[in-house]
Image 1 (cartoon, rainbow, N blue to C red):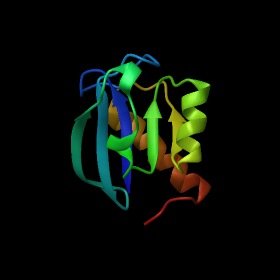
Image 2: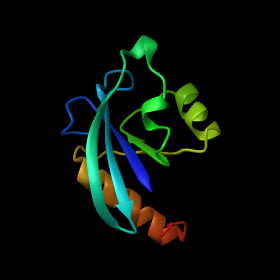
Image 3: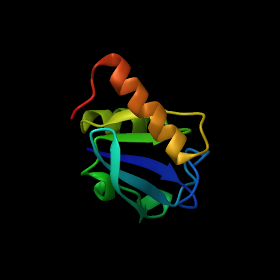
Image 4: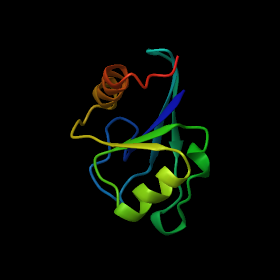
Length: 105
């Protein structure tokens, strides 16, 4: 399972709907992170989701309703977070998956 977290600087969760430079992508084996990388994104007016097509979920502090719906139509879960730390946002996501019984091993 791969999770994409929007980031402006590769270190923090992006706090803006349109202002992010890319995605921190975490590859998970169960609850354990086995790989992570920062994938740069195109400018906002040219942005597409090809660089996260292998991800099952997207985490951000903000996302437009249209983009949220577009991601969901492509089978991606969308999680809005108030966390600044990508690691904390990822922990919240995993906790939610475990609590709801939707965690994929």
